[in-house]
Image (cartoon, rainbow, N blue to C red; front, side, top):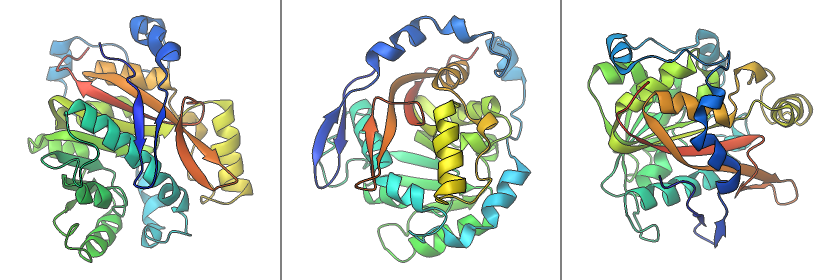
Length: 303
């Protein structure tokens, strides 16, 4: 198994290498049963049982209402979504590097993701969908909040390069029912807001073609994350509206790896995000104690 290859942070201005968590997570992938008794995770199922069970909706109505109330501010770089705007270049650096490596594409080309069909699940106002389209991907952005989709469409139409993005007010589960599949499926800063993370990951897996890629970013359920992502970001610095996150809904990297494995996705790369308060920028890091991102490949094997 090709675990934790070195990622290249391929920003348009500078290029540098960062180390992936090879030593820290190697025991995790070889001893995954250690986490199988976690009370926060679903019980294991046989492959047959998993196929017989219908896909359930993972929507959390309270979360949908929360984001609908601030939908008009998606493209306000100084508004409630400022942290995502600031983090976006670093998220894209990981995605471009990981997908180009997996699909054997040139990350330095003008359109490194050309030829790839990508789904952006929980796309919000399209701040990830648009740069993916500019990198050449054929993008489908979906969100369960109609206001988000309306804003995403209006903004994308301002640029011919992004006007071809397919934005749909729907859910991952409904796309599965329609038989849609993609080379790569993105779900960034989404899983901490769904009602059933395990069911959500099954849907992401079903949307991914065999040997395709699934990318998820989220926040670790650690005390440091509580202190920084909730207390500091929401209540002290007011970077986010108060109540945006619930610490108990966060997943640890170990839990996410196991949930994805049970959904038929093997995590191959993982990195953390580090914030520099002096420069006001994010960078990829070995530190996964707060924000982290993972890329896995679909194996077609579920537990």
